[in-house]
Length: 356
Image (tube, rainbow, N blue to C red; front, side):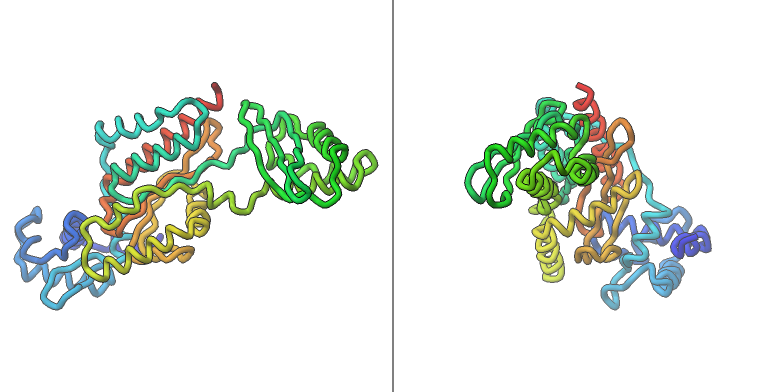
C-alpha cells in the first residue's frame, strides 16, 4: 500500500470531503480555498472554525499548504498525487471534443506525420495545454534496399518497405566505395532482409556477415556496416516528438513565479530529446499515467504536470504516446479521458491503415 493510499484510508468522511473540496476548488480557480467558502458548500453544516482545524491537520500531513498567512489553502504536490490516485472523478469525453478529435484523422491513409501533427494541434486546442506526441518508430518489413553514391563522402540508402513506403537516408560511406561494391552490398542485404524490419535486420546482419564473409568483399562489408549504423539515426527519437500549443501555457498566468516556471518549461520543451526519453516511460505500461511536478527528474517540470497515454496497434504493441503538459492546476477529470480517447483513436487508425 502506498503512503498516499494509507493516509486516505485513515481519513474520516469529514476530513476527506474537506480535502477533496479544497483540491477541486483550487483546480477550478487557481486560488487558495478558505474555510468560509467551504462552510457554504460542504454536504454537512460545519463551522468555519471546525473546517480550519481540519485544514490545519491536512497541512500537518503535508497535503495542503498556506501560500499566505491569512489566505486559504492549496494542495501540495503530495496532496495532488493523493487526490489523483484516490479521489479523482473522471468524466466522459464531451461529444464536441470527440468530434474534433475524430476529425483530426482526416489526412489520407498512410500519412502518419500529417495525422500526428493534426492530433497534436487538436489536443492542445481542446485541453488548452501543450500537447506532446511521440511518433511511432517505423518498423514495417523491408522489401528492397539500394545504395546510391552522391559524392566521395556522401551516400544515400533507399529503403522500400512492404507497405509501399519509401524512405531515403543519407550517410557517410567508408572511403574507396565503387559502384560494384555498392551493388554487392545491396544484393547481400536484399538476400537477408526480405520480411524483416530494420530492427530485426540489425540483429541478424552481423551474424550473416560472419557466416558469409567470403561472399562479400571488404568494401561491401564496410558499406553494409556503415549503412546499418546510419539507420539507427541517433537524432531520430527527438525528431519523432511533436510539440504543439506551447503558447497555451501562458494562459492567464502573469505573476513572476508563474512566468519563471513557464520559461523553465519552454526550455525543457526545446530539449526534445529529454522529453522523448521521459515519454518513453509511458511505453512501460498500459493506460493513462499522470506525472505531477517534480515526480520525475528527467526534465525540470517543477510546477507542471504531464498526462500521457501510450497508443497501440491491433496486436497490443505500443507504438508511441500522446500527452498534455500544463500547470499542476490541470483539470485532470476532463483531460485524462481526452488523452485516453485520443490515444485509443490513434492506435485504431494506425492499425486500420496497416491492414489497408
